[in-house]
Amino acid sequence: MTRTRAGALAVFALTAASVLAGCAAMGPSPIEQAAKTMVGQPVDVAFRSFGPPSVSNPPSQIFQSGGTYFWNDTSIAVDPNLSFIQTGSQYAGSHIAGMTPGGNGVAAMPMYQDDYQPTGYYGHQTALKYLCSIIVNTDTRNVITKATVIGCSNRSDGL
Image 1: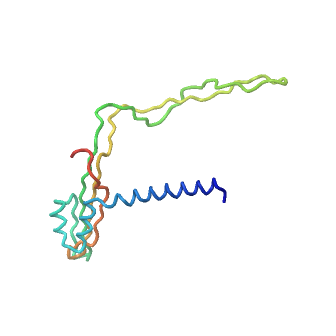
Image 2: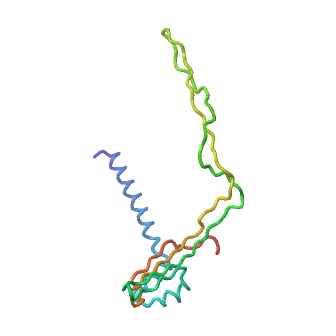
Image 3: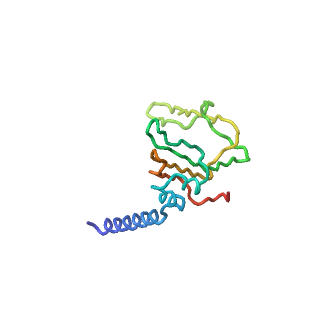
């Protein structure tokens, strides 16, 4: 193995190790940690911690199926300024982009390039500022069997 290749492999290994260490250091959010500790407990524990669910589907004794509860805390921002939102493009003509080389009895010929202009409208753009979804599954006795947390990292919007 050449010295250059060995050096490149060493740099790659150090970079990969630092990236993996950064990912491992983030860990689960406090909400995710709390949700995981609720497995095996009655669903009332989740109600006390997260409040009333956005969607509630309690267990069904008739169908012998467990329940599903969903909490959603999502913040969407609307930009107050109008922006151009492109939805497509339309043909706007063509122009001479260059000339083929001439010589040996052959005349130079123009090369044409098609031009397109954007089409769309002006409107307010929306952006997802914060996402937090919690899904709790229960058995037929309403005991938590699984808790899934999506997002729920620290809020940066001050809400």
